[in-house]
Image 1 (cartoon, rainbow, N blue to C red):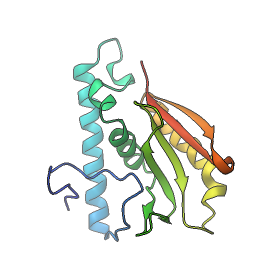
Image 2: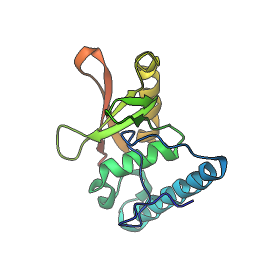
Image 3: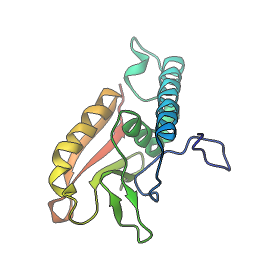
Image 4: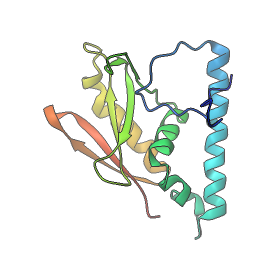
Length: 160
């Protein structure tokens, strides 16, 4: 299974705003392998392009230019499930949803789910989980309270 953009041949990264897709066991295993390979690629880019004593500690310029893609990829690859959206754009599955932030060079991470799913009650714990993962990859994260006291993360590439 190669879940790729048919026009670019790149691995499709899930932001949580895509339509739901049923995946079989073999497809899930293949997706996991593709995500691991993508993380290895990020590590190699960091090693080859970053300076300093620990080049893997912070995002490379390549990642900064693709921050939404990189943050989404890291979350999914580290085992955090993406949400999915129905035709109306509303969540149909509980998980993370990433989007461009209010400022350039910023991504927002929300924990969403269908009405009645309990996602709102999971958001603090799950966003903390996302925060731990992202910080371990050198991203700076801040938890924010938005409208209706809903929490979300603002993520930026760390300076290292």
